[in-house]
Image (cartoon, rainbow, N blue to C red; front, top):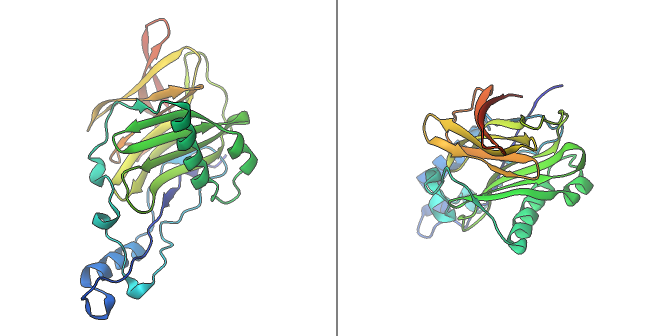
Length: 257
């Protein structure tokens, strides 16, 4: 089986040219536009599922003299400044449903996505780390969808996501199986991600990051997910994860794709 890439989703729309600039284009806008059009998405988290989100990062539509909104205009959490190694659960039926619905809307644009499977998938995990929200949708037969979104953006979405069905065995009661693993890039910078399936006896998962220390995962409905800024997982697995079990014991599980 060939591992697919966890594909970047980004949206960047044009704006009207700034007032007082001859011809409607300034040097900074031209430089930003040239960088965006010349740079192809590079490293992205690998993923087992057979269907992934279609890339839109390079598909920038240019109008109004070619002026592109700068990060300061669209807002956003620059350099993951608000990110936390300790996730906060999105609580409340309405809040979780809203987060799941937003994720579904983004993933529905993926080519060859299983629309029925996506519609039936439930939010196994909905967490926040500062201004960032991660949603992991879980469905029958190994179907899953994942979104990481910057909720502080005033205009247009900045997110990364994946969707598909993982052809992997169920983990043992004390095991973990990775379905997403690697790095990706957003306006805020690069991030590392590991997510997948967790056994019934697993009540805690954490990763000891060289740059950020202990990063705790969120768990729910037999799934786990954690992420952090930087490209620490760019080389893939095996990734050592600390696992806490229902009986209070602690062990280590290496995950890979």
